[in-house]
Image 1 (cartoon, helix red, strand yellow):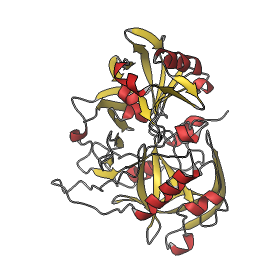
Image 2 (spheres, rainbow, N blue to C red):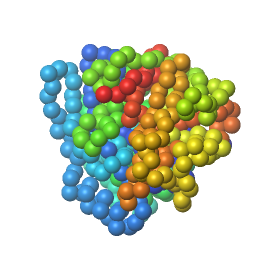
Image 3 (spheres, rainbow, N blue to C red):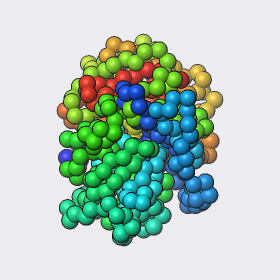
Length: 397
């Protein structure tokens, strides 16, 4: 069975509808590390748009220049919003460090970037790791093969020093790809998984666990803040939770299954009527997708209720009706989390309005499952507490 939840958090079959999120890591500690995230819209409708994106990325290189804050324990890196809906951040690998743009993904556990020997055409448009230039590199012959919802990566396991902000993980296992399929036109080099170790496909200790084991962070907690605007404000935090990013109190939700970022959800409603999860269900909190996904039959009913009509791989609504559509309420652990139409309806590159609801989660046959991606997480600051196996949610500022 394809374990979509362990690989880029269930990519949809159409990459144009699947954006990955790179967020700031947070832990409950006096030392907070903030990693800025870059928000990008993957515009793949035409080759011209792909070329425009590549030129934009080359002309405006993302720099990891640190800025000081009033709290000397906090490292902050300014974010640059490349285009629209994808959040990516930077790490470095090797000695001296080589910089890569990666997706920080709570739906997977593995880190990989392209090898300089990657033979796939897509690797020629991404930064590749030059292992001969790193004095701390350690080679293995162990192969890995990860299949995603819309792509595949094959390569081998390696070890090296990896930095996230000023945090350093030495002897960190990671994947070097030799073949990549399905990642054409995407403005990131690789993926950094933030799920539990048991979800690792390459059978390697994730970088977050290594940072904890090596004493780089004092508490096993991270958090995401996804900006609703195009300014440099999205952030990934490690080492503490900055209360400036959320309003009120964090509502803590225990994991429904320890070893994966999934929780029990009570129901989904609209105008007081149940439209999904009527007997309770599971929800994956997934920074690796911009969508809200659920069982196809229930999502089709939601599209009908909001007047979304199918066109190609997407469902469109009239942009004039957005302000008249109702909010959709996700109730988790007894707390209502409204998602207004301004959040679940987005505009494509032609200015047409489409629904961010997507079907396909019937692949999780053990229980009704929903995936709460960016459309949900832009509204709610999320904290991932490995020490207590729980997720914290609060309205984002």
